Image (cartoon, rainbow, N blue to C red; front, side, top):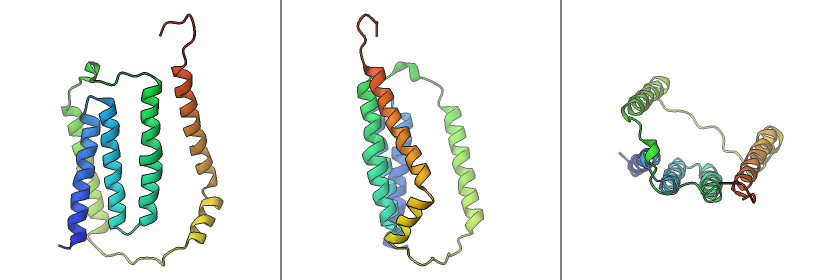
Amino acid sequence: MTAADVLMIALGAVAVGAGVLVVATRHLVRAGLYLVVCLGAVAGLYLVLTAELVAWVQLLIYVGAVVVLLLFAVMLTRAPIGAADDLDRPGWPAALIGGGTGLGLAALLVDAFRWSTVDLPEPGTAEQLGAELFQSWVLPFEVLSVLLLSALVGAIAISVRIPGRRQ
């Protein structure tokens, strides 16, 4: 077992543990911070796999933008920040479904690859990446930017106080 294998196992354990804490905590802000830890661990996994660009995109887009947008939405809508008592539901159905899904995905992964080696393609360049992004993926990129902008405008619209209206 190499050092990369040990690092992959450790980062995977951190990502899974933080993911469990995201859905298990009763504090909304703590769930957002656990999400930062989980997404940071996934970025570390990408670094171990020598996918530096994907790791940077993971950090900049998901950790830097989406989580910050989530925390701003919580602050702008004045959602309760402490523990919420209305979220008490039995946990065993979720654990059963999550565990079954995880085992099914693991079995699918083992069956698909059967621990075989894969030949790597030729490395790409920044020019190839830019051409692919701005030719084939420009529409999804723009749709995503409009979606994030509308979520921010919606959070601001919800948080505005209108005189005479009870909130």
